[in-house]
Image (cartoon, rainbow, N blue to C red; front, side, top):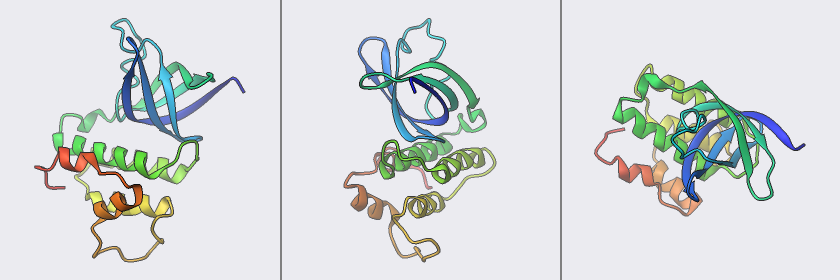
Amino acid sequence: MNTYKTEGVVLKKRNFGEADRILTLFSKHFGKIQILAKGIRKTTSRKSGSLELFNQVRIFVARGKNLDIVTEAEVVNSFSSWRKDLKKIALAYYYSELVDKLTVEESPNEEVFDLLTNSFINLSQEFQDRKIFARSLLEETGFWPKGKEIDRIDLDNFIERITEKKIISRKTFKDFVY
């Protein structure tokens, strides 16, 4: 299979070379994947608006030697209703960071994809408790037994012990109560 099509949410991006960017997506069919978006940083790029952080996109990808390459991208949901609310953006960063840290590459998990997209959709309607998302993600990824009480545990410290990495978004938005 030289090409494939999938739907995913852009979790993070980093610059690569002069005009390219490496994107990390959590996709519906392939789990977490890293893809190369060639020429996306050029002002004439048609894909740059589609492949922004937190966008739910439908992408067409060609297999490459080291990284797969995006050939087409279409926005399914940009979640524009909460993009002007800094507290909700902070939560979106937190959700994306947890999904990135608690999942492995190319391990499909439709429940995690649904949890992430539904949480982004729900952000437009109400402010959410981040602990609900973290608990659900821990359960779906197998780091916590389903239905077991979690009240007395500091979830962020628990996740940092699992991943052996600090949760950066927690410190970046420390002024917000979430």
